[in-house]
Image (tube, rainbow, N blue to C red; front, side):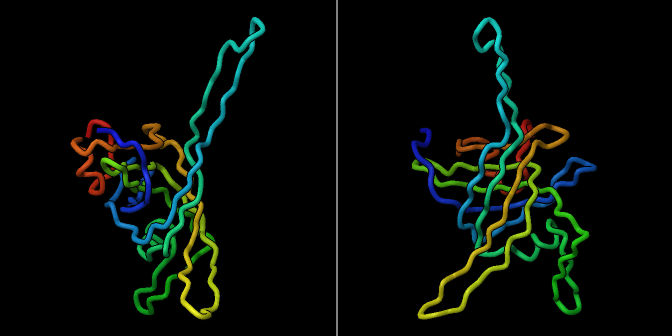
Length: 183
C-alpha cells in the first residue's frame, strides 16, 4: 500500500560527487538530523496569444533550504566543506580559499506504511553560523543549521530521486550507493 502521510526525519547520509568523472564516492552517515526544509527552485513563464495563455514553460532549478542537525560531522567538514585536519594536533582549519564540494544528500521520512527515501543530487552547502549560549538551570542542546542547494547534475540532469516501495530493488540498497536509474 502507498503511504497516506509522511513524518519525521532520519537516516541522513551523504556522498562526495566528483564533477570530472560524474561519480559519487562512498555513502557515509550523518547522524543527528533535526529538520530539513527545502523549497523548489525554478519558474514558469506564460506566453499569451489569442487573448489567452498559449504556451507555458516550467523550469526545474532544483531545491534550496535549510538542514538542521545536532552538529556537522568532522568527516563531512573535511571531505565536503574543504576544511583541513592536522593529523598531529587534531585541529580542523577552515580556509577561506577552499570552496565546498558537491555531494548527494540522502535521507528518509517515516510513513504510515513504509519509509520514503530521498536523494538530492549535486548539492552544495553553506557554512553554518557559530552559535551557543550559557547553561542555566538545565542543559539546552544547541543545533547547527546550514543552507543546502541541490541543482541538476550536469551529466544527467538528475535533481532528486525518491522511493517508498519497500519491495523495489533500490530500496534496500538506498544507503550503500547513490541511486541511479537502471543501476
